[in-house]
Length: 151
Ligand SMILES: CC(C)(COP(=O)(O)OP(=O)(O)OC[C@H]1O[C@@H](n2cnc3c(N)ncnc32)[C@H](O)[C@@H]1OP(=O)(O)O)[C@@H](O)C(=O)NCCC(=O)NCCS
Image (tube, rainbow, N blue to C red; front, side, top):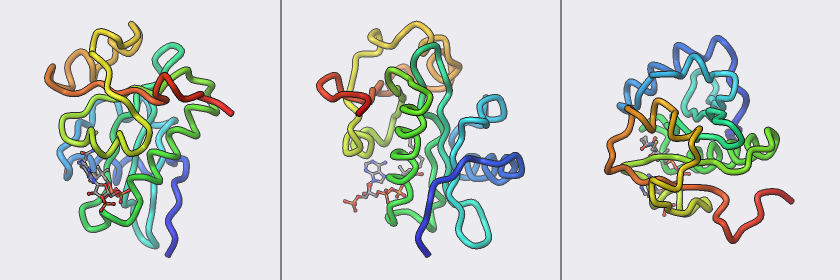
């Protein structure tokens, strides 16, 4: 069955939190930002999600998670592309993320590494930046400065 990333519905919140718990990603703030979450479902259940937290003129890509039974089928890429589409729709200047384990995955999807002190102030104020991710995590931004964000 072909997968698609769709806007999360209110009833997705429970399964979304359960999946985040299973893959050991934080549940902090998920409810607050669920209006900008995307989910992928198979016939019977939620198998992937990600969210965009709006931080001023920019966005923070968070909660990118795919059920371990469904990895390697392109769902992670579909979610990232969906988040990039949402960022364009919301007219965000850039999409930032912090990761300790998946920088190579995001590089493949057009994100570039940035020093942490290059994060916009509103992104720095996010819970992930302040407390959720270790100071050793990599800051990344899409689009890379050499790529146009829109068009
Ligand atoms: C990262 C993650 C979302 C990828 O999901 P996925 O559905 O397997 O991704 P896709 O199928 O689109 O892409 C698979 C490719 O990405 C690579 N990849 C997957 N996870 C990776 C990681 N952590 N680092 C580098 N590459 C990774 C795979 O090796 C595979 O490469 P291949 O195409 O050469 O075989 C998933 O592994 C996951 O949920 N991880 C745990 C949570 C996490 O780390 N989230 C990101 C940080 S917030």
